[in-house]
Length: 94
Image 1 (cartoon, rainbow, N blue to C red):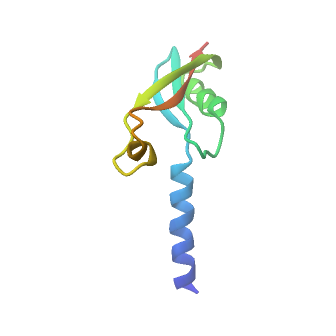
Image 2 (cartoon, helix red, strand yellow):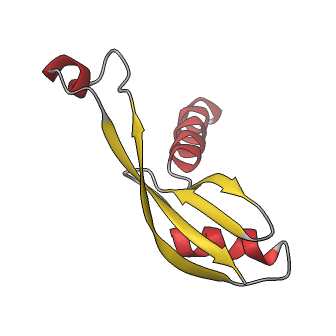
Image 3 (cartoon, rainbow, N blue to C red):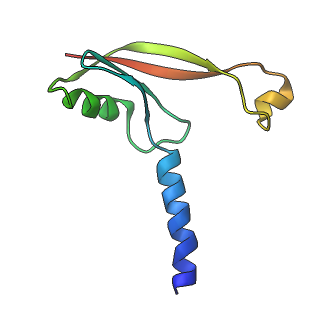
């Protein structure tokens, strides 16, 4: 029974950590968050939680684009695409 549960636990932890909303930058005045393709949660909820640390509320201000080079094994690298665009959501803490 334990042998069956161990792989499932590892899979659950991997999925949970890979699907988290990433905080790119945070301060008492603003927070920028990045959402992976598959994510659990919302950018709004993550921004709200970050701003709450400072006793403030998150107010959506817009979307930025982060340009990152694809990893060597990705389809984008094979097809010759040089950049991958990842949206970054900007919130003010007010």
